[in-house]
Length: 190
Ligand code: SF4
Image (cartoon, rainbow, N blue to C red):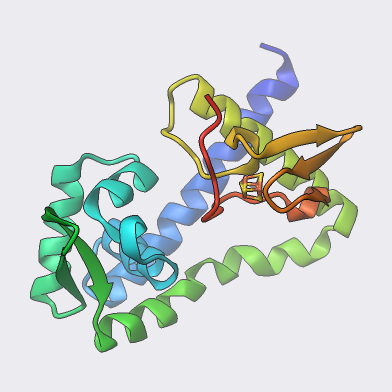
């Protein structure tokens, strides 16, 4: 491994540590675990199929049993409610209650302590870091380290446009900064 590779791995571990610390602190102040906080924030932006236990387990790379335990605990705290899917009575969708939504909105800013320092980077530096991270996430997925990511680089609608990017669904070129990490229209590329 080249020296720079080891330093990148070390740097990624430290960024990950920063997220863990912030999530833990956010959870502590609300008597919730880090994953419970993440589920609440996730549900702010997801509904339907994407709010089912199986989708949550896939997104967070956890077992369905672990997610179900967290949902049970959140429901006991009146932060989420379950609705049986009329099209498939064996599964249910999870929806934030009013209190859960309030808490999720407040907690969604937990990463602002990381976002603010990004201001020291130029727009070009941000794009280089962003596309580099997307490539890494894709490789982690291909290596089986993390599950399917709803991102452009694993999407059947994605194509190259010269040295750039193109979405066949949107019929539009995508600048580096427009590449998506979590797209609702994602179709897994086989
Ligand atoms: S559908 Fe979404 S994830 Fe797929 S290429 Fe288009 S923008 Fe990217």
